[in-house]
Length: 254
Image 1 (tube, one colour):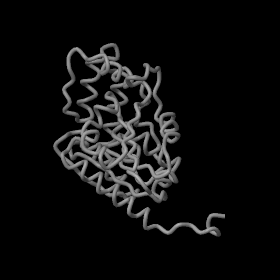
Image 2 (cartoon, helix red, strand yellow):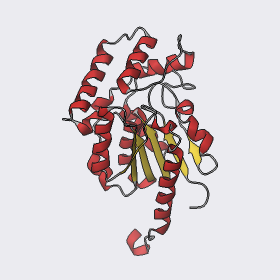
Image 3 (spheres, helix red, strand yellow):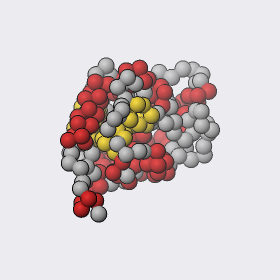
Image 4 (cartoon, helix red, strand yellow):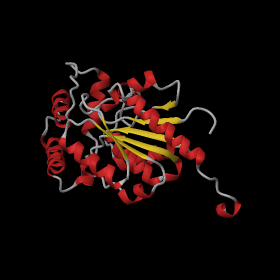
């Protein structure tokens, strides 16, 4: 395990990888190799007509290498959960930050309301006005981000990508497969939204995951001053566990 561990950082909706992970780009490169892919539809990639979390998960899985630490925010967390279940042998750890995977918490009133409200907004919201659509979306997820008016071209492309995303309320997360996967899991939330709390509660319990709550930054806990230290400690411990794990002998590999 020579060299710095590789962190693959997957962004969510609206904004691409560089702004989503700006604090990690400042604070973590000396300790880790950061890989920050830009998802389909986000600058510098061309616009797309459709984004499907299952297809995105396949693309992400193809990018992952053995020993990677996968870290993902919001819609990217849905993608990462699916990719991690598909290629569990490639991961050294998985961290998800408030993924809107509402089906894992189906039956919880806040999660059910959140899913229903999202479906309504996608069906009835002002799809011909990207700025108005974005502001309604930000309110729904509990974001305190105040977008510029008018939107920058990069941000407008992100919103137009948001408009064609398959709703995360449709995602079926393979909890049993993830629970059985050998890598450690970390779930991060911001204590600002009952639906995200419910989803993260279920993921913590079902995946036997560590849980960290970093309040004060809404739907972007990765901007919290403690986040980098929390993530670095988690990755360091995952690396130490891998180093201490017994290697398979010839009979066991055959």
